[in-house]
Each structure stands twice: as C-alpha cells, then as structure tokens.
Length: 315
Image (cartoon, rainbow, N blue to C red; front, top):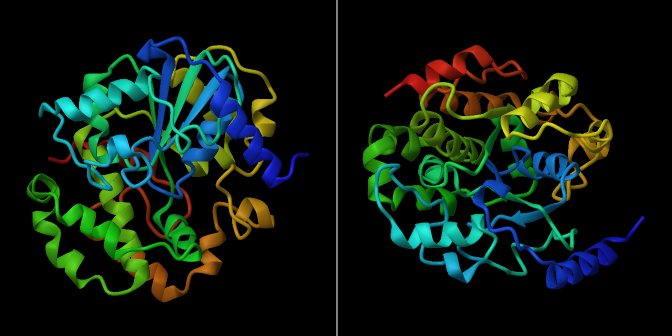
C-alpha cells in the first residue's frame, strides 16, 4: 500500500503524463453535490469501473486562475447567456484544461472518460445541463445534520461562504429575498452551516423540473448498494461494471478524514445523532424547515424520497 506521499507523487506524475484526447462532452460525467455530501466517494465508485480522468473541483475560483472571475458559489440563471462561463465549461467538459489542482487525483494515462467531481457548481447546474445536455449528471444528497457535523469537525468557514450567496443580486432576487430574516437570525455555527447546505441544495432542486435531476442519496448508497449502484450506472448510461464496484464502495474516499465514520468504523448514516448536541440538531432542522426542505430530510437519518418531487415542483 502506497504512503500518502507516494500517492501524491504518483498522481502528480500521472497528471503530467496523461493524454486526454477524446473531446466529446458526452465522455464527461459530472458528479455534483454540496461539500461533505459524498461527491468524492461517488466519483471514485464510478471511476473504478471506467478508464477515467478524475477532474477535481475545476470550478474553484481560488485554486484555478481561469475561473477566478466567478463567485465562490457562482449563480447562473438557466436561461441567461454567459459566454465567459460557457467558454470555461467547454474547456472542462471537452477535456481541454490541465491544472495541478484539477488533476490532483489523476491516475490513468489514457483515459476514455472524464469524471468531473464538483461541489461549487450547484447554483449553475441547470445552466450546465442546458448548455451541455450530452454530459451525464448525477447529484448526490446527504442528510444536513451529517453534512453539518463533518463541516464542524473540519472547522470550515461559515460567514465567507454565506457572503458568496448574499453578494449575488440575481441569486438574492430569485431565491433568497424572502429568506433574509432566516439568514440574518442564524447565530450558531450549526445554523450557519445548515444555511449553506440549504442554499446549495435548494437552488438545483428548484431549478430542475420534477424527475429531471438524477439524484443519488448518500444514505441509500450505504444501506442499499445492490439497488443504488446499478441504478446510478443506468442514469449515466454505463451498462457494464464489475462486482468489484461494491468493494470500492466500502472504502474511504480520498477526502475522508480521520474522524469520518467510515474510517472510525461507526455508523455512517446515524453518527450525527450521537455526535451533535440536541441544540445543534434543533438549529439545523429549524433552518431546513424554514427553507421547506424538511420534506426530504427531518429528524430521521434516512431521506423521504417521495417528497423530492414536491420540493422540485415548488415555484
């Protein structure tokens, strides 16, 4: 087994040597979701079955200079033209961009596919689908309390993330103008992290028509892999995969931390119930309910799948 340093050197070497020659955007697969929702894990499950170039978070404006003109969580109205955004997305989805950050997980010299793993494209995901309809898309959802726990353990920022939402007038007008009391009254870190989860998920859920957003539930991927894994491959049009994919699904992802449930051996679905305080759980679920997303996730650790259509159908 390679050490962490050996893996970094290996990925760096492959990142310099690989050749991504098939520019068909249909050979790119986009895996999106809020941070700490399992995007890396899902991407690795898919990539294990394909000759694949993993593209790590190409829409990070602080890491990739070519995307630095855009907001940290950039919002784009689905019907609006944006030539600059289109040109950059075209580079990504056609495989024409090379970058140390994007290629940090490179492991294949002659990839046939590109797997774009992204946590900052949620607010223009519908726009991407309309502009690049040939690119298969998967959107992963995870319980907000589990996401908040992970963000708290990593001591991630809250106010700067929220500021990225608030400084975008069109996002405010389209989705947040009636939520300002909720946003300004959020005081605890748990509540602020919940705000980030809500906005990151609410926008794509509302922009896509019912049943038009291919959703993978994190909890189902753990509890029902024999059902969820075949279904997700079907959604992206991949018919052939090996039984080894189920073993890959049981391994920690590249972004799992030492306190992650899959590393410590605790229950990945219910860990938040014992790690968060009652007050923190209440703060999270109060925010989720205020954004009308409690029909999908409530105090139960499992999602209410039947309510997703109702959420996406709301104006």
